[in-house]
Structures are given as structure tokens and as C-alpha cells.
Length: 249
Image (cartoon, rainbow, N blue to C red; front, side):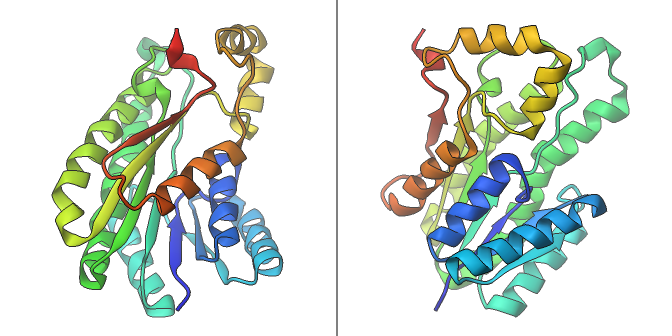
């Protein structure tokens, strides 16, 4: 029986790389996204994955900060495929704004999507994994949880929460047959970073100059870490940091 994976924020950037890797590995892929404007891209990606890898792939619009929407998504996936074998939490937003210039609504929204969104999807998928007796959750974190970066206070706080959440949840659910791990990307070249590069070119270039490999990574390099975690059956509660050597200094 073909296994099924959900990827939140799975349409572009790192998420697209993760969705593609799962299809390559033979999973049916549920490509989650939030905005209606992303529907055409989600549909296109689903079609590409089906044609390229012979698996089923579907776009699924749901705001991960909405628990009810997440619960419906999990139920719909189980109804369609019979299981949820892998959950990859990747959905996230950032403001790139000095903290004092943010409104409470802005930083609250970052926390709701980046942290509470992970809570919600895990909360609704875990009961199905418990019933199956197995499952895997991979949370996409960030080196921002450990590396101070100006203008990312709310983002860093949300990622710090994910770091603690992953370890505590992993300890809690491994006895049920569910492995929880996380990947912490460093600077990764995506559409989001291209926008930042256009707005703040010197900041990006200066940051990349501090990376021992002198470049940003790619979504494919994050996807390779996902493949490792899915296959590494004796790894649980761990953080795979993919950052070009940023922590060697």
C-alpha cells in the first residue's frame, strides 16, 4: 500500500522541494497551502508530481493556524488514502520588521502560523498515527532559533518554540510508534529570500559572507535531509541543521 504524506506550505521554496522529494520516494503527497492565490501553483505542482513519479498528489487549501481546518484536512486525507504516514510541518511566515515597529496583530500572526500551526497539525494527525501504530513527523525549524538576526524577533521566537516542541513531543509519542524530528535550515535560496535580496541586498550578501561555504543552500539540500530522517529508523527527537557550516565558527 502506498504511504501518504502531508506537507504544509508545500507549494513553493523549501516546501516544493520537500513535496517533490516525497513523491520521488513513492509517497502520495497532500500539498497544503493557505492562500487562494496559490491554488494554480498547487494544482500545477500536483500534476507535475503525478506525471513525474507515478504517485497521487493533491492540493489542499487550509490555514494551519485554524484547528478546525486542520482537523478536516486530516480526516479528508484518511478518508481518501486510509492513512497519514508522514507529516512535514513547513508552513511559515516572516515580517522582516524591527520588533518595535510591529503591531501586536503582526507578531501574533507569526506565532499563530509558525508555532500554533505546528501544534494544530500534530494534534489532529497524531491520533491517526497512534491508531496505525506508526508514523513520522518532521518539523522544519530554522537556525534563527539559535542565531540572533535583526528584524526576525517574532520569527526567531516561533522557531525557538518549535525546537522545544519537537524534542518534548518526540519523547511523548515514541512509545506509540511515532518518530518526531526536525530540520533547521540556514540561509536557503527561495522566492522569499529573493525578495529579501531585492529589498536588502547588502544584508543578504553580508550574511552569506559569514557562511563558511559562502553561499545559501537550496531547497533540494533540505529535501535530502528529509530523506535521511525518513530512512533513519533509529533517529528520534533530533535536529538536523543544514546551514553550510554556520555553526562551526
